[in-house]
Image (cartoon, rainbow, N blue to C red; front, side):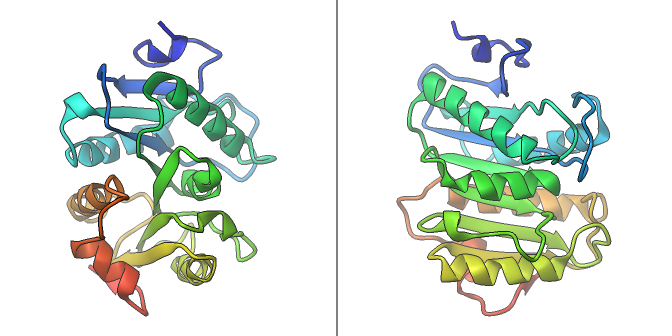
Length: 234
């Protein structure tokens, strides 16, 4: 059995922390938590940024029967972005996923710094879609890797840590690059996703349900945000 199959990803060499792994999975969801611009401390599962993604993963898991779905998170080596550290960890995790599950449809869900890493990692052939929650997206952040992929950005209207406007601008670049992309704003939502948390989680479930079916036409909320010329407001 691969070390990545061990519950919780206990091996120090593993970048994939598994929460659920059926024998014959049909799809996979991987979460990427937030962090800091620069911090070389070891990332730990009890840090608040990591803990905040637990209910997000539970919400996403309801999009598909558990006996068909790999659930996991990326294990970062360090807390900061530094020199693209979370992106390298994500690539390693996706490589481990390929060994375990094969080429199943995979959705990345990233928050803040993790949202940036998830969008960057869309270039990996294992990734079919990305859901970025309150992502950190500098104005120069590239979007060309999203060509042919699905991506939704979900941002709190009153986020003071990362910019909803930067997210809206990023969606324009993603669409120009050939992505099926959209943005949704949570009215009065904050960066930590604590204000109106139930709405955040319900929306995650609805969007992941679409992202896990890349071969089908988008429906519901996903289709609406892809078609909208301005951010949708919930």
